[in-house]
Image (cartoon, rainbow, N blue to C red):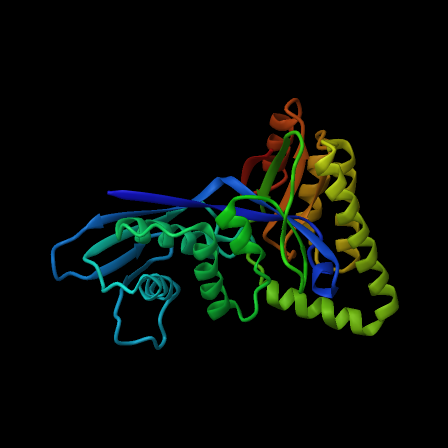
Length: 310
């Protein structure tokens, strides 16, 4: 048996404004992972990928590329890259990452499958090659993705991103402790982005200034990460949430979790991702971690995860 994994990801600062040319920062969530295990099967059985969390089993076929699911697509891209025939393997996929919640579950599952399949074939791919394959799958199923999810997940490093520019890896000084609270509410990022665009068109000057202000927060957040300044970073996160409220992408549930985290001693808190559901993220100290986690659960969080950026 061969095993491989990949982490989730979350937007730390800059969501929505990034669509309008402003920077954003995304970080890996190493405590949440997608894992793939490969087992040699009976000769002639071919390649099968079972994802119990998704409720799917994919029998990979070389002769057809129509209507293929993401697991088939990623396996075929690996075989195409390595110029190898179908192996007799069973791959089992499991993910701790909540699905459709802005935590990069799809890219993480793809990365784990690429890693375990290439290793089982004894042709381990470099991260750059792996990243290109995962990005291809993201393009097939998400149109024109930014490349943030796959890059943060494959390299498991924080990135600074401006749309249309190359991604930059961020040097981080010190250690930052976060709690991620999942609302348990699904939300379509695409639909929320479209709503924000309609709002922007009603008053481009006003909403353009909001996007500019968010961009300024991201630039300051970059410095806070480089200077090991958790207090400043927390303040910037809370300000970012205020601007996201003005963009109408927060919700009663997200605002309640943000307020609960701050009241319990978090250094800062904000929604993360598309909004109107999904997740919020709180920056905590070691002393406040337990109190904030308990407060988030009391406030209605479906699940709370912790992760450290260092």
